[in-house]
Image 1 (tube, one colour):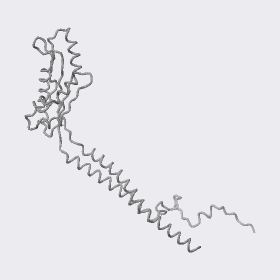
Image 2 (image 1 turned 60 degrees about the horizontal axis):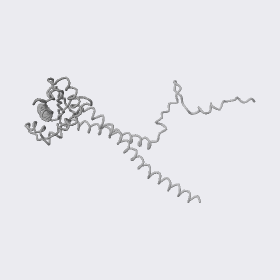
Image 3 (image 1 turned 90 degrees about the horizontal axis):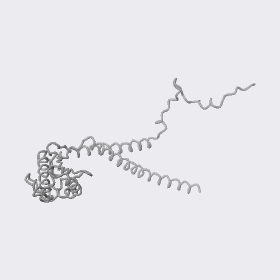
Length: 245
């Protein structure tokens, strides 16, 4: 009698049901033990929880921070227009070489005192004042930050006026007239910006930090839970070897 040849792969399909689409009906989750599923769920839960908590904290900090205002005044130093043309270039070089001095002059008590009539002392004003001299220019920018919008502009304007008077006082003179002209080209009231923190931006930062910390915490928790099981498995294997020996 002639035996019918049956391909080996035919036996591999015995007992496995197939749907009409050709799939066996088995899912990835069918091959994962409940313990592994619990570990994955716990891991993702820690990371997600830390992310949400970080985002909430970041948004809360931004919402609770008081809004502040920064007013910027700009002072320009130039040679006096009445100077002869032969002296204009010399005075221009003098001004550029003394811009760092004018920068430091803005922080002196004589200038700060001009703005001390708004309920703040000179020490408080100096902490919230930023002075900048753009490279290669004869401009001096004074930026003052305060929780009150109107006071921010008023103090910035008074500081600019005080700096203007101080520069004129210490500048060289010709026939009793200063060779340097100082003018306020921008007032604080026309250049006031709000420094209110962005809630969405802080929430994003907090969420990112929370995700990083949550990932580290989840990894640490997973290692701690895996360590006792590994120790128990090793001890059990050792006992079995002892019994067989």
